[in-house]
Image (cartoon, rainbow, N blue to C red; front, side, top):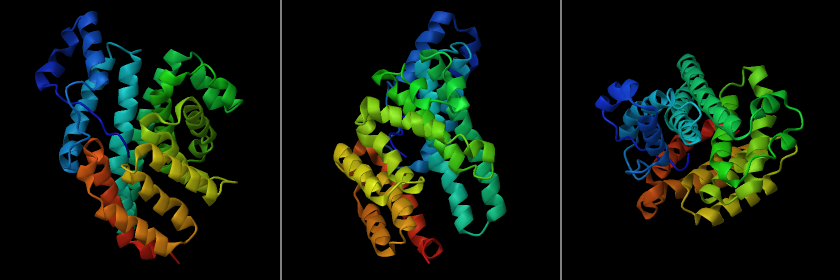
Length: 302
């Protein structure tokens, strides 16, 4: 997970008063909520604190969205927020339960994660629909996906990225739903479009997606995945620990390279998260995942 930048400065009084806001006031509020002004939780080093705070902020944004249903900034923020919350906390819980042999609890938790990720995707699609009417139908039709995305431009990259990320993660956590799995070409096309428009966005966040995806897809190669890894590390100047974890649990596990897998994850765990304050929270969460994977290496390697 990268760029967990959420602002939650709004008191319960604000939520209670939303129904009385004028259209202008609610529009200003929507702009403020989606702009990230006033601070960020991305620099926090306490995931539990963020986990407890995040749902209130997300529900606040949903309340404002009811009065500003076509606010692209707010739709982008919700797509981003629900994706990051679901992956950072709910998916991690499901994986830990799976590793712990609690398959029934893991399935329930993974179902919740999938629902949250689909909520994020739907907010993203709503935003894309504002930018390019008819795009949702074109994406779900799975025909000529590249042509369906030609109207999108560089300003749309954040929205495209979070829509694609949430969609792909929902599929990953819903492999028993064949109709959902069949939609995989859509998030792939979206992420490819984001890469065409601005591969540097989010200090290489777009490329980080392809580190795991390239090695796992039919016809993909570890060599190409390594190229995406190297370029993303270059763009982030090595400050994003999450991409190293993705490299370890994706291509390195697929290739059964245990020694390299362990070396990469130990390096992630030993990294000083304070060297990149803006990525502190994401890196703390990456370190937690690295520890989980290392603890269960025997389950991942033959």
